[in-house]
Image (cartoon, rainbow, N blue to C red):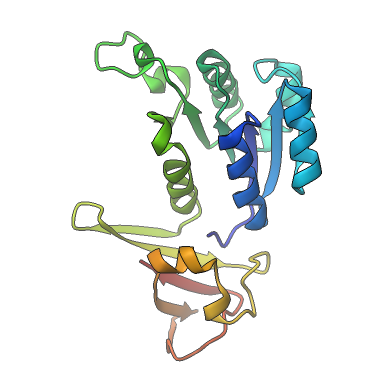
Length: 214
């Protein structure tokens, strides 16, 4: 998905948090998961190669332990709106670039709400339930992109990704990038190394290449 390894903190080890941690750890991102339920933390530790902290995600001490100040992205996806919003507020104060909150209560996102997401330090507020995973993964793609151009009111998106030495796809054949399901929705349309366009007949991904996908 990305040419850049990001430090990502995920709050909530339920089904949404588990899937996101699984997906993002496969992309070689540095993942820390926080949850206050020991059984969910144990499942996460046993199943995935991610760091797990058992504790209250609304606690500054716990967030500091997770390395919040060094995070590129906070995904607050617990089942409690107030915990998600509190964590985003603290992340905003520490200068975390992207903050995503999963919120169920319409009081926090309706047009008549006194407080807007931006007042709470939230860059993207996700609701309803079905949008959570897809929207967060879209955000990650955009956050790591060097260029994003939309066509047909966003139905088609051209994304430029600069691939450095940390990219897990370096030296791999194009046909092996992503899962079969992901390749159904993604097409590599151009590759550029320096100022030189590479032929799409080129089957290997090289370091310091910019890949344009749609």
